[in-house]
Structure formats: C-alpha cells, structure tokens
Image (cartoon, rainbow, N blue to C red; front, side):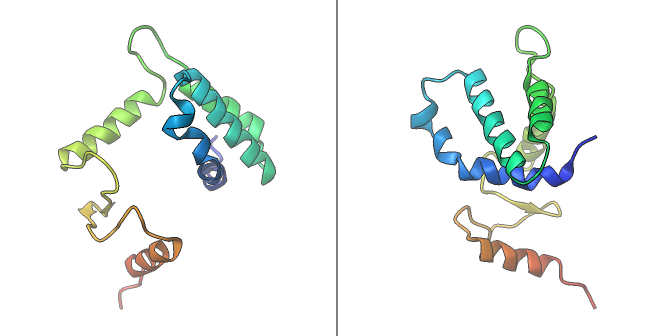
Length: 129
C-alpha cells in the first residue's frame, strides 16, 4: 500500500535540498549515486515528520532499480514515457506549461510564489452557484 500522505513531506525534503542536486553538484556523479542521495534526502525528511522513511526509501529504491538488460529502465520508466507522450501530443515539451482539466493555463509561471498558486487554485475550486 502506498502512503499518499508521505508525498508532500518527501517533495518538501527534496525541494529543501535542491541545491545539492544542481548541475554543478552532480556533474561528476553517476545516476545511481544521485538516486541514492535523493532517496537519503527523502528518508530523512520523512523520518523528521514521523513517517517510516526507511520503509518508503526501500520501496523507492526498489522502483528505481533496473528491471532488465539494455534500455529496459526501471518500474517507473514506462509511466514516465506515457506522461511524456501525453504531453508531447498536446505540444508540451518542457515546463512550466500547465494544464488544468486538460486545458492549457498560459497565465501560470514557473516564478509564481506560494500565494499566487493559492489564489489560482482558489479560483479553480470555487463552487458554481
């Protein structure tokens, strides 16, 4: 079973540690080393909020392990390919393009602050009368 309540603390931990994953910090590291460091960040972040970071980190490592030989990828590779294909069909190749209910929201910017996101989400979730 997936602990969906762990998502935001895990992502928060990654964002807090993002500078250690900037290009200048990872250029000489292997993909496996970067995965391992990311998993450690998630583990520590989850443990700090009372989640079972060790169990979740082990599951993430399992999902990122190669599933075969050649370019077989991991358990998440196919899902990522589907997501990329879905967005490319719609002409989206990079962020910060955002779709809301399948429609592009061109007013959204990668430079938005938390309050700007909150305002946009509030506009989208207003009950129709």
